[in-house]
Length: 338
Image 1 (spheres, helix red, strand yellow):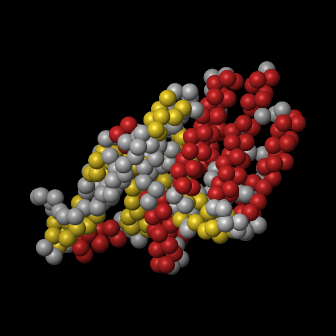
Image 2 (cartoon, rainbow, N blue to C red):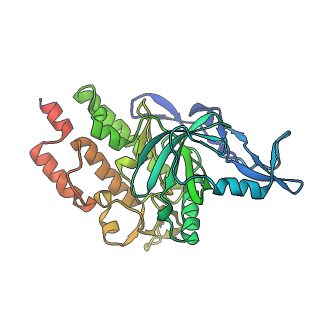
């Protein structure tokens, strides 16, 4: 399936005119790789790659000429034999070259790998083996990640290409963004380089792009539920991209009519969240709407201005904001006062 978007001129946060919802060629590469799939070939199975021009992953309908044929059992055995953890220099299935470990946390590890078939770096999110207790949990995880894949392409969301089970672990293969996360930029001080005026412009620029990415997901009925600086990636040029929709346990939900009958909204039960950025309704275990992401976006913007996180619960953000203005101790305020 290919997306056809109409051109619409808007003003970017930097003040430059840009084409929003333009054809994908203007956003990045003129082609986007599709998922590795297994296709039938006279009773056998071919492990095959394809390339879709300017669009989300396309479905492969048949084997390429001269493709190497592998027995399904052999393919499955090779996938099952993949190690749970990878090291720099490893080559997985003669297809993925492990370049480096990007990070790790309670859920698992993130690797940068080179996809030999696509000649492209990918970020591979690999949960810990113990993260799943049952086969049903694995299936639920894959299903949740499919909500991210279904978002397709947008300039301010990280694209998820596919999920592939290797070594018994569902691995998420996503777009690699070289610049690091917004959390990294805050901690390292990179967000505040160039003096107060450059800092203010950069913060507002990132905040607007951040909101555009969330708005795109909301238009498609998806509530992220774990919005925070660590889930916003930045290119070296400062382009912001919201990430980890599936890993935040987001769910697509149906629109329901508002009580007054004047319009629809999106409601979902709270699941994934980080307490320091959660909304009051998340903390209370209530139904969530798009507003929960907007609250967490605001908390993230507050952290950008202050330069650090000084609270443990997101619902305390309003009090932190009051204190911020009363004491003028934020990074940006200090810079302008000096």
